[in-house]
Image 1 (cartoon, rainbow, N blue to C red):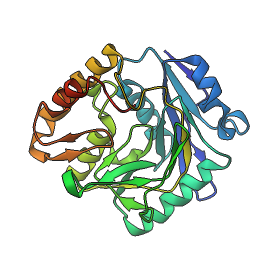
Image 2: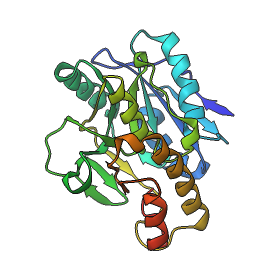
Image 3: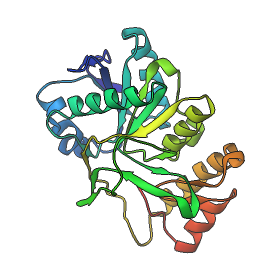
Length: 257
């Protein structure tokens, strides 16, 4: 089930059309965080919200189809319900996209937090407030990346990139990056500061249901991208299939949201 305003994109000061889509698990959190963002509470930018979706892909891919018909080269932003976007955030994002496009004309995906390289050479990039802590590694943005966090990213709809429904609600952002790279597109983290107020624990045991969900999605992701390993995300490092499950079992927790 969906709710929200028209998906037709809002053209920003840089001429870039941006629409938004999210999935809802807690209507109270949606109201306190995402819908409290000025771009929605004051300027009523286009946001489509999906209730009871079976996967992130169900929501994102349906919205992407509509966007592709509404604007010749629009961007569709996926955002978690527990994210707050500061005033004029959409103009900051569009400005950063424009800057990144000048450097990388084949830019397909942008995010606000992600990773470069893998294994011992991996490092994080971005600029977010995560559960009260500023995350801002000392890397100049925009920056090309090899993985993205799911909290917020935007896809250039004309690329035809979609989310994989088999991944449910985990690993789909990095899967998107790997898809893009295999098709000759670039992905980047841009400086579009936002606040992420996830209720997921950062340390200690995670709920059993969450751990099972992550392990199930990880099994699909690892099998799909075994030829690209090693892969490092903001939560896990994978050298071979089964590494995520082994790590969760050893820690008795799923450490990221």
